[in-house]
Image 1 (cartoon, chains in turn yellow, cyan):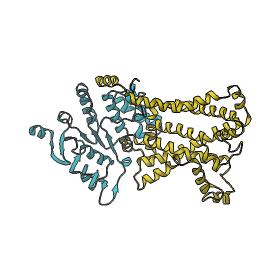
Image 2: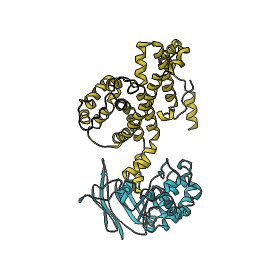
Image 3: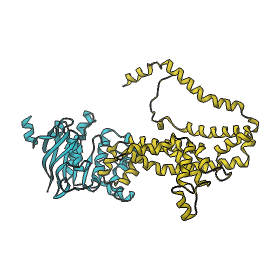
Image 4: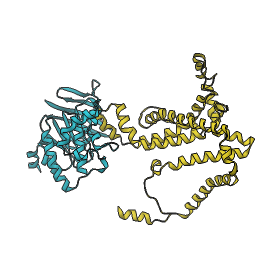
Length: 274
Length: 227
C-alpha cells in the first residue's frame, strides 16, 4: 500500500496535458484580468453605493436564496427517485429534469410564460381563481431562477444518493425504520456533502440568472430587476457602471465557488505534484 | 416452536433452494463457500429479499408466502440481522447506532437510552457511546452491531460472518465473547461463517450450503466425525 503510494508520487505528470490545461486556465482568467484592468476603480465605491444597485443586489440575494430553498425542497426528492426508483422512462424523466441546463435561458423563459404566464396553461387558472399572477412579480423571478438552478442540485444529489451503500438502508429497515425514517436518518445524512455541493451550484446559477428571468418576470426596478439584469442594462447607459457591477458579481460568485471543497466534488486523494 | 424455511429464492441465474427447520434454543452455523447462498438465506429471513416460491414461517406466523402474496415487511419482523462487517451507520454516534431500532419506533432518545442500558453494560460499551463508528476497532464495531440488533428484542438473531475482517488474536477473544452473547439470547440463533473453527466453537448444529443447496445438515459432533 505504502509502496504503491510512493510509486504514484514518483509518476511524472504528462507535459502535453499540463500545457493544454494551462491554456484553458488562461482562457478563463484573461476575461477577468481584462475586466480588472479596465475597471474604473476610483468610481467603484460610488457606483456600488447607488440605491438602485443596492436594491437590485438585495433582490438577487433574496430571490436566489429562495430559489435554492425550492430547488432543494423538490430537487432532493426528485434526485432520490432518479437514484433509487425503478420505473419506466426514468431516462426521459431525468432528461426533462435537467433540460433547462442546456436550453438557452430565453427559451426557458418562453416555456415558463406558456405554462405559468397570465394566459399560460396553468397560469390562467391562478389568475381566474385567485387573481394571482407570477409574471412580472418577485415570485416570477424565483420561479425562473428555480427552473434553471434545480438541475444542478438534482444531478449532484442524485450522484451522492447513488453512492450511499444500499445495505445501510437495508440494515435500517430490519431495525424497524419506515421508508421516510430511513430516508431522513440514513440516506440524506450520508449524501449530505453532495447535496450541499448541489445547493451551492444551484445558488450560483440562480444568482447569475438573466435570460429566463427577464423573459418571464420582466425588468421592474425594485421588483424583478436582479443584479445581472441591472448589469446588462447598465452597459447601455454607462459601461463603467456595468464594469463595477460585474466585479461585484465576480467577487460574490468566486468566493462561493472557492468555498466548494474538493471533497464535495468527489476528490479525496492528494494528487500528483505539478 | 420452530422457524421453518421451505422456499426457493431466485436472483438472476442463482437459485437458493432450502427446506430447513430451526428450533428455538439451538445455535446453528451455516457454512459454505462464497456465493453458496449463505447471506441470501439470512436476507430472506430478515425480509430484505422476498422468496420466489414456498414459505417462511416463524412460530406459526407466515412471514413470506409466495403463493398468497403474504409478505411481512422487514420493519415488522422480529428478526435482528448483524451484517457482515457490522455495517454501522457512519453518520451517527455509537449510542445513536445502538438506539436506532428504538428511535425508529418513535421512542424518545432518553427513554431509548434507558432501555438500551442493560445491553450497553453487558457489551462494555459505556466508554464508546459518544465515539463515531470509524474510530472503533473491528471487535468494538461488531459488539456495537450486535447490541444494535438486539435492542428491539428480536426472536431471531442472525449473524453474517461476524468474525470476518478480524485478526487472529481478536478472533479468539471475540469468539469467546460471542459464545456468551449467543448463550444469553433465548430465541433462534443462526450464524453464517466460512470458517469451520468458528462454527465448531460456537454452534450446536452445522448446515453446509453449496450452489444454493443444502449439502450437509447435522450436529457438531457428527460434523467433526465427518471431517
